[in-house]
Image 1 (cartoon, chains in turn green, cyan):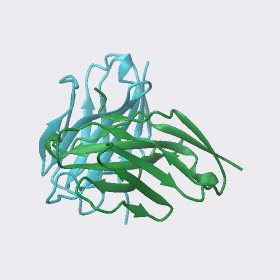
Image 2 (cartoon, helix red, strand yellow):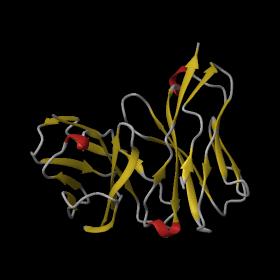
Image 3 (cartoon, rainbow over the protein chains, first blue to last red):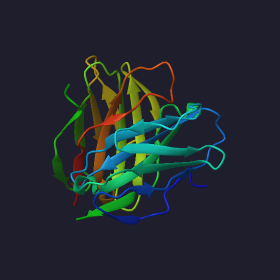
Image 4 (tube, rainbow over the protein chains, first blue to last red):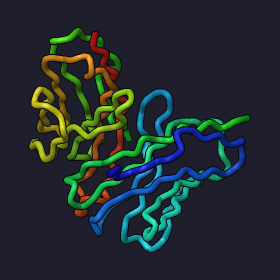
Length: 115
Length: 116
């Protein structure tokens, strides 16, 4: 079974609007971390936001927030007030306590922000 | 603070050759990770080094190897290159944390390897 599933290969959003990128995960480890990264066409993976499995509050970092629904095993990324520079590939990733620091990535969502 | 650096940026090799990729972690980070991003296969974990030791290895053949130096920089070596080794190789680094799930990995710009 896929550990990380991103069901939206591509998304479009109008500049200044909010967008939600979906991520579901599968683990039996009670302790895990969920990460979102942005990959522009240049290739570098840019860390955006982190959510721990025991965190009570949803993580927020500037315009990024993570809608963490533990019972549904989902960790959706919400980008508010989209900017043209947000156009990139977005990856959801998970690290389980028993995984020896290995990050498992989803297949990614290509976000295009329209002017 | 300087980020993770990788060299070279691009590399073209022929099948059967050997290649060495280099990575310098963020200052203060002791762990280095290598990932392969091949077209159609997504990002796959290759190797984790910490304090000079290989700590974890992904599902890759032994011709993928590496090492970490006393200054925490790292090399990834790939022997007997095959066409399917063509990929973006990303290096990441993290601090030595107390919890294995909270240590954020910060990535470098990658080395794009093309095997002809």
